[in-house]
Amino acid sequence: MIDIQLNGSFYDLTISAPEPLFARDFATALIEELDAHQREYNKAKTSKTRQFIEERIIDTEKELMNKRID
Image 1 (tube, helix red, strand yellow):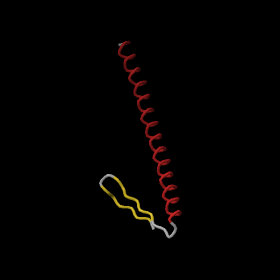
Image 2: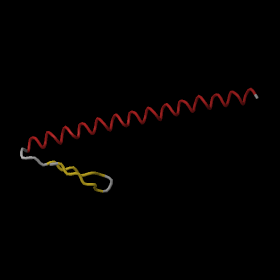
Image 3: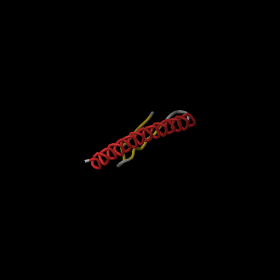
Image 4: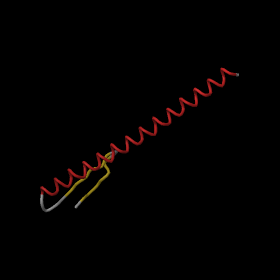
């Protein structure tokens, strides 16, 4: 059995099983998968932010060059 409860800005996860080792192994695997997902999400978000900043730098350089010419 898996029970998830919202606790403020966190979630409490309770895993129950007839075999304690299975419950432990399942919880460990779940945490590892959640960690991998969070890392991938953060990597994608950081990449998008970096791309946005690089594009803004290019646009700003173009604007400055156009102002120099005018």
